[in-house]
Length: 258
Image 1 (cartoon, rainbow, N blue to C red):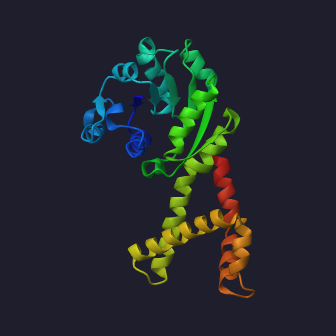
Image 2: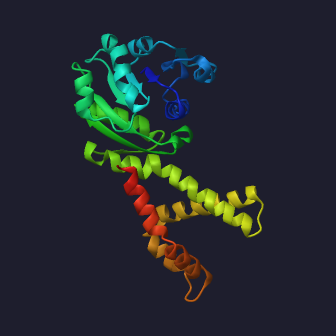
Image 3: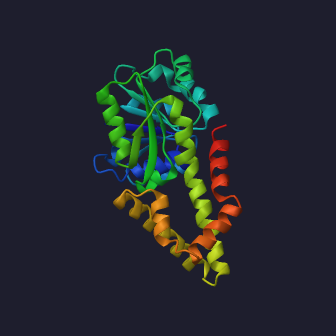
């Protein structure tokens, strides 16, 4: 199965990095396309086929992934329309805000396609990815979902929930990074060197995630285990809530869907 990635910026490049770590995908089966070679050279060096011609990439692939800015998706469709094989190929569109109706309008003879939103942790095979199948068979859906499951966790959803998924996971990874930065800076004020503080925060977050996964606890249950009456943890939590911690997170998530 040959996979083309049209657009290898931050997200497209991260996805190719993830694909290169999937055992069932050979580097020679990956085709990367970008207007300049600066972003494709690193993939060419490890065996992927690189081109600046989107039509060439689309023509040679079984799965055509388009990962460009939303306002460029129609332009890419105009480029590759003549070489697409609707009965033989699958189309994966990795651009926020693109609707199924838009795709069908831009490509009247549309192959089965998927709207897919990963996050940049896909480079480390740790993405939370949302997959919306459109006119795809169960077998095609299993294939595409399985591919993204190899690079983290993929969740099948409908278009109506895609914006919310984008906010929680694709935008959400930036929010998680901001917490890491804030807590790390706090650690420096408490007396740790910056790199040590960051490591402490990252390991603490990783431990929290693994604990919730292993036990199935609600986060509040886990919080109750470490909030001694009159203790340090409850004082810190209450101070954060006085500053609007939970409200700020929810407001930020809601703002990202607009």
